[in-house]
Image 1 (tube, rainbow, N blue to C red):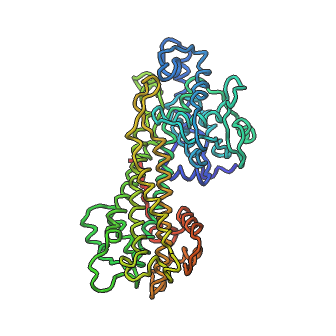
Image 2 (image 1 turned 180 degrees about the horizontal axis):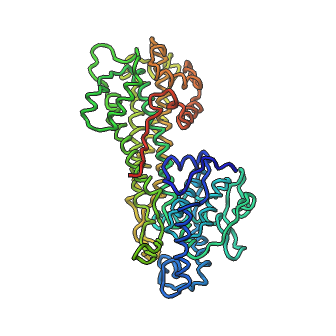
Image 3 (image 1 turned 180 degrees about the vertical axis):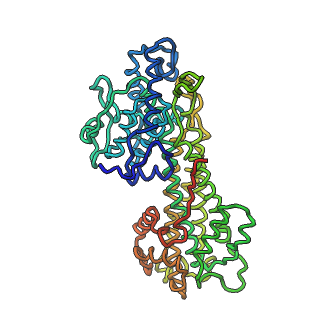
Length: 533
């Protein structure tokens, strides 16, 4: 198997690295060097605890959660590890998308590679081989509280990755996808040629106790949001021309006066995209545009700023040890120790996912207002009603905006924050939970809705430009690229036809980066500057 360019777990894991592995099947290198040494040293500390049998250590020689006061014999520590995986595999609902599960495996492998979880190297390398060979556990989407980490999602993955000490437990190996077929986890691993280790003491906790799902889902959501926000700027520029907007609001001096970097950047990209257009600037007597045009930098700019901030938080968490307890080898005068705490708690990822969802709602909200204006003769500066060449007999694109409005309204419900909710569990031992996994699911749906709303704006703006007497020949070079991309898949609407498939086509084009690739002014716009600060 070619491992050239493989991701090294010993280096820093970035937000974009998660997408590269989860979606584009970038290979991951097995543990080596200093990273391998850290994991081995950490494991030796756990082995020392199991050999000494002189004090209770949570999750190693005690039970879990509300059962932490129950002592466990060292010789039963492997069974304890198996049991925590088995008892936490209680997820329900549809399976996670494959990219989510792969991202979660990578995030867990990275956390374990830091050498604070006390697992053997084989545990980390098993997760790595599952990624490299394409074994993807079937993981239900619902069931995580986001407090003791993502217990249920990680447990379903761990069923596939490990082997119970006594085989024969019904469903004990979980399920996995392997080369397009859904099968038992044991069979998938066997056919992929991956040995399933029996988890030893502490390793069950190491595999299940962390925020891997929430954090990796946030990484993917940030990558998707960057793609959608870039496309939203392109759609805005095309709408400026369809609506014959004024560029005064994009003035460099005006936007610099805001001292907001995101606003200044969005305004600059819009100026670049409209350079050379013969459609901008309305007839005499129009002094300023509606907010949906004039205030686009002030709306999309803060969203861009928020993506950068969230990328820095998520980037740090991807490279953090989130487990309990944490294992610290001897360091100078400080002896080796195992410290109990709460680094698994998902409050941070939950807040970040909620914030991202709320920010992206604004992208759809202002996009829909531009779409509405293009359909309304009183607001569109000369475009025919509903963007139809023959309105009345034909309804034109009236109903397309209905879909966008429905999605914008859907987002208002989805954006209600999950992070403000909590339900005590485990006999009140776990009395504050984050609900971050719920936030991840809703954030993903919001972003999907936003992408579709922007796709609708692109479709309507292209129709509006086509209906202008000056037509597409008067577009700027940058927006002409976007117009031509739409037209390659969606011809002008002359008489009514079903448009659902065309909306879906543009949606997929946005997701693939077709509107923001090489040649586009926004192609190199880096919204996820997640350097290790």
